[in-house]
Image (cartoon, rainbow, N blue to C red; front, side, top):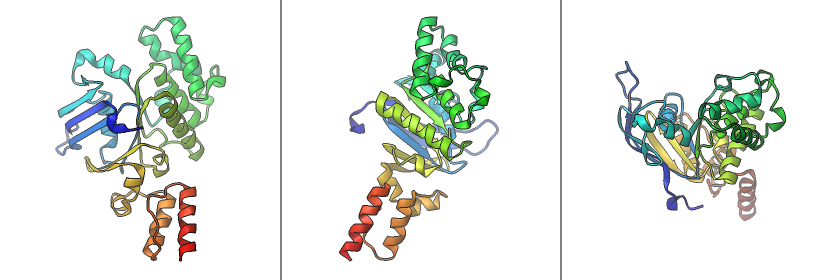
Length: 284
């Protein structure tokens, strides 16, 4: 997929944001485009501005100055707010905050019901959304009895039932164990790859970003790095200076390079890393 040839579904221009009562800006003049159909991970330590950016993409917050456009719609246009929210769905850290019903399928149906979608269409959307996230067999269960990863997948299904073209996930795995994190990341990756849905994943877990098309690293309200996973993870010193780790494979190759081995920092997967090390050892 050539992302340069795709039209942006989200465009940010000279974006500034200051929280009410604060004297210091949280975001300092960001310029950013998100291509439709792409999987973009936004990384950064706490306070970097990544969650603020996520909320601006869905018009939960509005710019202090500058513009955010969703499919060409200015998010500051109050008359188009519903169009913005239909285009960009949001999933938050705590799935309990997004679950509103006592039965899984009723919870997934909540948003389309409020949009006035006909009953037959709601039934179809709910079943489709639950199958997409692998939770159809739990449709009659009580959400509070599910695991954290299962709850988050139900929350994602609730967003999918609105049929957005883009889903923004704000630290969706922060409260999950490793199994739950893998479940959620696998689900959103499949949404992008199989359905062509734009995915913006806000996270600080490096392992969740390896399969993304693009990584955007934020620092103190600015973009510190922007590129493919191979390009960004190769900047080990920059990431360390931002308080971020790199994948274990990159860390291993980085340390071996310091010991004099000629190895490519872009070998991200375990297979690529092992092959690069074997080649280096044989050539030594």
